[in-house]
Image 1 (cartoon, helix red, strand yellow):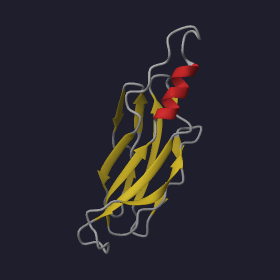
Image 2 (cartoon, one colour):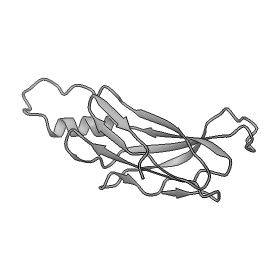
Image 3 (spheres, helix red, strand yellow):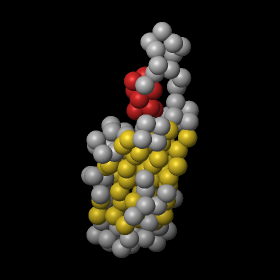
Length: 136
């Protein structure tokens, strides 16, 4: 979880609903976009801050902190390698046809943040769909 001087916190976790378990090893990148009143000279642009990788519990515990003046946060989940590995591990037979490529190779979630609030955004993932929501 990240904490900025303005009190904004951002956290996430990934749950693989196709196997009923946390999704470990998913890279997550965090970018921010400042408000028009922010100090960034290009208020419409995204600024990458860094990222993390989901742990065995599917959580990113060390995302970078959004700076003061952040209006929007973007989380980018690189899910393709995880989904390919999971599909190969659960494929019925090695003699069967090749495992199909995941439909969504990545998931991008953009959301608004407010100073002094915690923003937890879980990703529920399956090979052919996903869902996100504001958690607690």
